[in-house]
Length: 189
Ligand SMILES: [Zn+2]
Image (cartoon, rainbow, N blue to C red):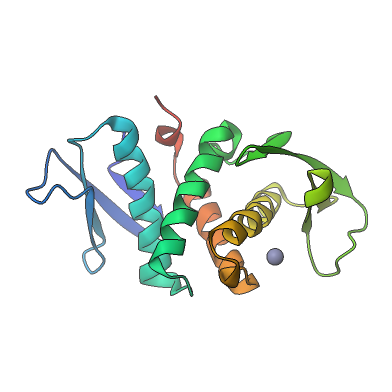
């Protein structure tokens, strides 16, 4: 079931389902009214992916003003969708034992000390591991996991956008979406 309401960054977004649109768009967003119209004339999988895209776009472009160009944004959104679909635990706000990121599987390991200071997590590309500090609050750990995953995928989209401001903003948007909404529609076939 596609949602009819969505909480995003403190806003209540109304999602209007319409059978089709004269211009055959996938969705339209009205930021001022806090409404998204999603057109359901397409295959359900496509409609769901486009709905996720519209919500992500709503947050990134209307509120965070992140320094991303449109092409990077589209690639990034699709890769985030793929990571969610490959890790059903993430859709529920839970941390899997291993996280699959674009065909590679990373192990989660807790460490008393991380090499980099001031970080709660660290991706070790060569060993396919993500290191976390111990005793993290589960929601903080979830956002840190996405932070590390997004470093990896944004690097593939466009290296120049791989900066802490962008990564923190995107990871926090994902946490905000998942902790405040039932996202199970993302995983439904
Ligand atoms: Zn970082």
